[in-house]
Length: 340
Ligand SMILES: Nc1ncnc2c1ncn2[C@@H]1O[C@H](COP(=O)(O)OP(=O)(O)OP(=O)(O)O)[C@@H](O)[C@H]1O
Ligand SMILES: [Mg+2]
Image (cartoon, rainbow, N blue to C red; front, side, top):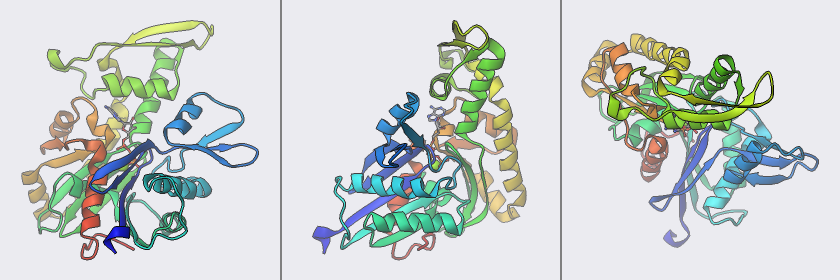
């Protein structure tokens, strides 16, 4: 009955979980869950759990259960989506929703055990009908590609834990790669750089702020696009005195260069394996970039120059997967790219 029908589209990302319901995003939270150390009771999820993570409470520990794009901690991995689903439905747990339908994006590298865990947590949250979709497919749909056409398209989604690269045609993934080199790795590069270059010890939250504020993959940006240097205050690794530095975007581009090059070489490998007809389509259609990593300054330009094919950044790239998942939800009875 339409009155009771509830439908959710979910992007369960390693960094962020986004849930879409009734035509809009109803939840957008970091993928973190906090437990009380002694009782193992869940104490917080999402943003409040992130606050706890940043402030090191010895009685509470936090987990990012999907840290590397596949499930790292099965107990937490089940609790987290279950709690997010319940929150998206208004916070009340029901044993059974007569018509709760869920479409959930899963990483390209998911194992049958990962899929089982997602099935279990959706069932605990009361889902009656569950479909899964590979994230690069959802991302492609979300950027507006007509994935059912006999036409090759390439999507590169740089998330927190994984970079998904896929060639899509006729509603299927023809070639792909899912690597654990993405935003988290870039954040680590920045932490290491500050330690080596300035002897400053900074936390991952600060490093992520630097990346999101002044991150660039080009050492020279046009003058009007140059961000102002980022002032960091941290602890001197030797003296433990407060230490300050003004970090510039070109320093960041140099310190993340190694990681960006690894992503480029993976794109190359997937292109090498791509059948020639689809390759020509990709050259004509451009390559789409999505995920939080695609917000780095100059990324489309750098990749275009390296690969010799034009790259384009999707509109609102952090929401590409959830948009595609939501679209798949509307077509769930017929879509060939959905799995049960
Ligand atoms: N403006 C920005 N510049 C650079 N990186 C950014 C920016 N905004 C967000 N990010 C990074 O993007 C990543 C999160 O992106 P996204 O939400 O697409 O990942 P996810 O879907 O949760 O992860 P995954 O797809 O790996 O499961 C984080 O590493 C974050 O630091
Ligand atoms: Mg993602």
